[in-house]
Every structure is written in structure tokens, then in C-alpha cells.
Length: 117
Length: 110
Image (cartoon, rainbow over all chains, first blue to last red; front, side):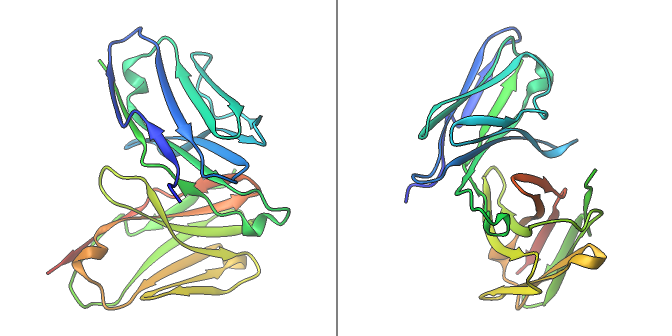
């Protein structure tokens, strides 16, 4: 199994530019999560999808952030326009949603390190 | 609102020591607790998942316990090795909403 795949691994951009991060979940998983990790705030959930449908986007910091999941094997997180305070590591995770939540185990991708100058 | 804390924030031990990492959470209405390992510049690797009805889980030299009523979990690492050096995070689940602790940075000295 290839695991969760994220691209790019590193992204350096200038303030005001659009940034698109990509994620391919583990095959067969039906839930996908986007997280942001910073030294100050730790790991924060931004949004998650069940069966390609956004369920909870309350963690998305502002309207500059948007996420889509057009099919079961692909998701994007877009920041437009980007700002220096968006610099962080962005992780994608996936799991197989069980009826009994006790069985839900998350698997993470390697992350995208974003630097906005 | 669920809050997850981990003590200590950092720990340095000589190789071969047994050690315990702690995780505390304020809301005991959780479905499970998961321990992860994160190496510098890498993603999170799942180590152990304890369901809310379970008391402990074991994998090799790792043993995790859960006391849901008191809001505590411990990760026990036996006979530590330099390769165990990493940051260890715990996460509690409320359905599909996972709340993470800040992590404990472990250094095992040869």
C-alpha cells in the first residue's frame, strides 16, 4: 500500500500568490482530513470529508482557504491569496469510516511544508 | 471544548531505560485514543489505537494504557533505543473529530 500521498512536499511562494496542495488518500478509505501544524498552535484540523462530502469545515481559518474532493482518490486545499502567516506544514490524513467510531484510526501523509514570503 | 495536554514537553534518557509518556484530556466522552510518532520533517506514524472500552494495547516494546474516567493515557516504552528518538503525540477522537496533544519530544542518548 502506497499510503497517503501529498504533493508538493515543499512549496515556497510569495505573498498574494495562489497555492494548491494535493492529496491522494489510501485506496479504500472513505474519509479524508486536512490538518495544519505550527510550532505555536500544534496540529489543527482544518476540514474533513466523508465519502467526498465536506462534513466539518469549522477549522478553516478564513475565506482565503478552500478545499475540494472531486472524487474518492483526490483532494485539494487551496489558499488564495496566500499570506506569510499561512506558513506551516499541511498534512492530509485518511481513514476508513467505521459505524463504530472506536475503530477509526487515522493515517497521515508526509505533509507539505509551505513557506509564504 | 476538549483539551489535550502531554507531560513532559521534552525528555532525554540514556539508552536502555524504560520510560513513560503521559497524555491527559478534559472530556472523557471519547471513542478512542491514538498514539503517534513524528520524526523531524516527517508525517505522523500511528503506533497504537486504544478503543474507549479497552484498558491497554501492546505492540512490541510499546504499551499504552487508557483510564477514560480520569482522562489519562500513558505510553510505556521498554528498553529505549536511540531510534526511538522522535516526538510522540496522542490524539482523542469524538467521532471523526480528532484532537491532538502538543507532543513530547523524546531523545534517547547512546
